[in-house]
Image (cartoon, rainbow, N blue to C red; front, side):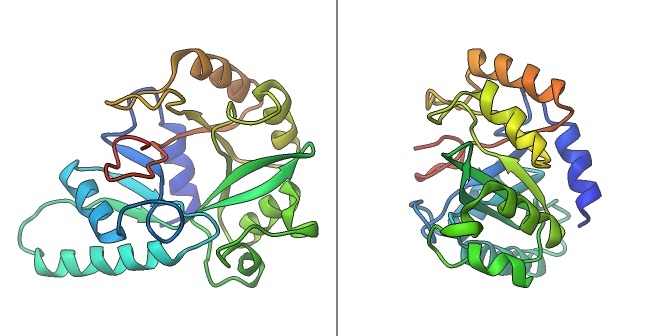
Length: 221
């Protein structure tokens, strides 16, 4: 799938996109989540998701397992006519922005590209690789998009971080996020309103995801 197509999907994201249609922030046992990738995909199929991404921290291993599982599922059920979700490459990378550690989500990048290798070793980078500008540039060089994750969870405010990320060329912000860990999941109203306005002002795209770390992809824990 093309990055342009992913941009179109992000351009359509609204308050109701997650978690029953899209989910672009999910973790598995390949970083700090509790679910096996196969179980995650089975839940995505059951929910009839259209698009999803596994965004393990500094790892693409869960994506590869899920990709194989989806391919096998499609072959076994090729005559069922049921639509399967589109799985995108994803990762969550720790980075320094305004001397503050933030998380940058990457999507639809080439996981075999040389510039991505420092960020796919299952640990936080250091030095120039740790700087947000270099994470963003690496994702772009590998054909992907860069997104500032949950901007209201850091030491600095969204009013500080979003303009700084925009100046470095970030593509989108995780606007719709459940900071209160509600079940059922829903975006936190106060933060969403604030972040949405900032993202619109800087001409960026919106994304959403549950940031699942537990046994249900429809909530965070």
